[in-house]
Amino acid sequence: LLAITVVAYVAMSKLGSMRGFSFGAGTVPRLFCLLLGLLSVLIIVSSFTNRGPKLENIPWRGPVFILAAVVFFGLSIRTLGLAVTGVITVLLSGLAVEDFKIGEGLIFAVTITAFCAFLFPFALGQPIPLWPTFIR
Image 1 (cartoon, rainbow, N blue to C red):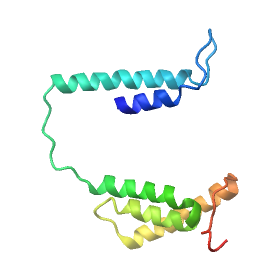
Image 2: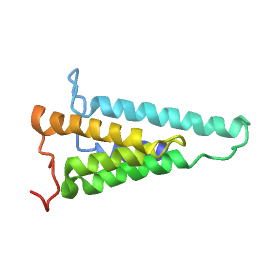
Image 3: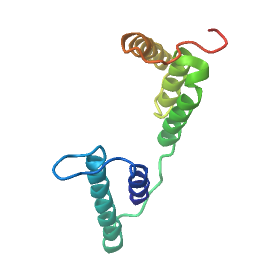
């Protein structure tokens, strides 16, 4: 958390800060950053002063498949389009749970992708490609 705080604080260095009583664009993000930094330091200090339970077996399946889905979406949305990327992303993220059923997952993936395909390019006018580049 402390590393995230430092990166965020450096990233917002060019945003305007508070002048007198008027808030600049970076005032609230800086305040949240400072609060996160303070909480991070408190967590670090408490980790050295309190003895907690030992870590047990970490279930890696969920975080791995969710991260894979996010990375896949980010890398493929421009080339494969929302129609293909959406279905694969939903199926990948569905694999994070142990009782995943391919039939139910496919129905949900197609339904949510159809909704997103209507919502983002048409209803909201976002420049998201709907179809793969080799079809357009």
